[in-house]
Amino acid sequence: MMRRMWGWGLVVLLLSGWACNEETAAPRTDWGYAYFPLTIGTEWRYELDSIVLRPQVGGILYDSVRLEAREILQDTLRDLVGNLWYRGERYDRRADSLTWRFRQTFLLRQDEQRAYRREDNLEFVKLVFPVDDNQRWDGHVAFDPYRDIEVAGQPIQIYADWNYRYQSIDQPGNVGTITYDSLVVVEGADYENLLNRRLALETYARGVGLVYRELEVFKTQCQQCCNGNTGACLDLPWRQKAEAGFILRQWLVR
Image (cartoon, rainbow, N blue to C red; front, side, top):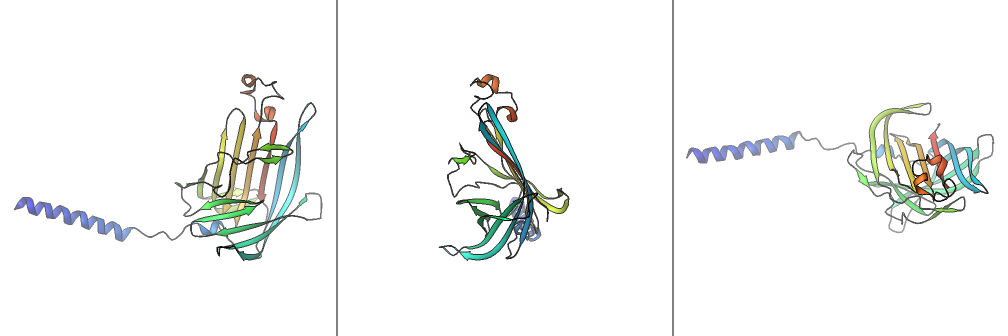
């Protein structure tokens, strides 16, 4: 009899503990949607530094330029399955020029699970929800990441082997001269091997959207630096051995 009572007592204790945990576990109320705000008329102004590697007779030219860019959400549309997209326009100009040049249209969308951007006929999954340290995702699920993209006349698999994750979430910080209360950093790639280097980072501010972007894409065949001697090429800095690629840094100014 005592054994039976002890058994029922254990069951009651376990059920009580389970019920207590159920009552105290608060449902998630913040999924991080505010990191990707979408409103018609929103405008972002960026400064942008870029360096493109251009093959020249006798070496590689590092062609650098400083630009200002602006992105404006102009309208909405629905795709064939009814998804709502925000249509934006991107303009840029040289830092010493007054004339804005239209560059491209782009599309942004957010649903309960993901935030998307379409540009240059490519669709990217920029964020996943909830914004959480443990999230990993394929940001290029809508296209072949091993496709060649031409950069200064050279074909490069820019998006090969990326693996998106949240590097940090909900942290205060500065981007340029602006201080933000809550930032999330997305790492798209940070790896290198003998022939390729890929770094991709994006930072989003709560209630603002994208505030910083950095891309570093290099490839080499070790010809220019080392006449194909990969052993001699191995330990050289990428700035010395890269034969194609680019560097891009973009930050919000207002």
